View 1 (cartoon, helix red, strand yellow):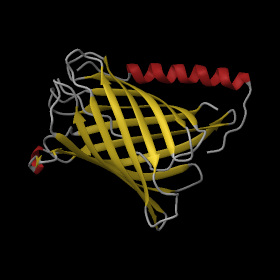
View 2 (cartoon, helix red, strand yellow):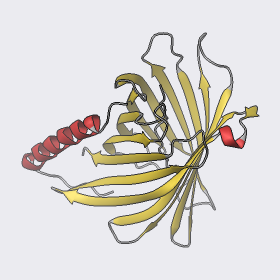
View 3 (cartoon, rainbow, N blue to C red):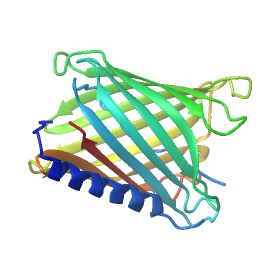
View 4 (cartoon, rainbow, N blue to C red):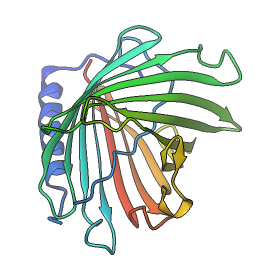
Length: 260
């Protein structure tokens, strides 16, 4: 990503646009307890000096009222500290089905790039997150991911393998296992098309039966554009549930805005 200095006029315009975007995201809901994690796929590649704000979220559409209309909104401020380490502060808001929007947790996430980009057959990284729960009695969580990425014939393939552990006296000692997969291809200099897949398989030592696991997959549209010399990236996805334990449909959005 190339950063270009921009005037205060454009900076004010961006601030106004960002405020409107956040407002739209927060009201992008219909009153509808069930809530799903926010699906995101992480690349192992770190860009030193990159400071950016990201908003992402999702809402579910399901025939079952207990699963319909749950939402998650995530706000993230991230910075590439070195050529191999990126860190971020994350705030999450949830709205379960038939519930109200509430603050869920604050998290500190880190990505460590383990290999130089393109140096080996596979680009690798490690993700580590500590999530501080906001609700009294709710356990904190520690989440780690193995990040893998490989270009093949013009397609960029990314795989995240996740293990999550609840902490504290109220926490469950079992390790939860999840996966996320993305394949995308550049169509023009500004547009990419692809698909993403997400799954929650249950406890690592005792995986759920396939019908009780959560699996979602769907198409994604990726777009980059410039406003006042800054490059904004966003993507939109529609994910289809593959099992009874998955929401029938999930609409997901993500936007990233560089701050320097």
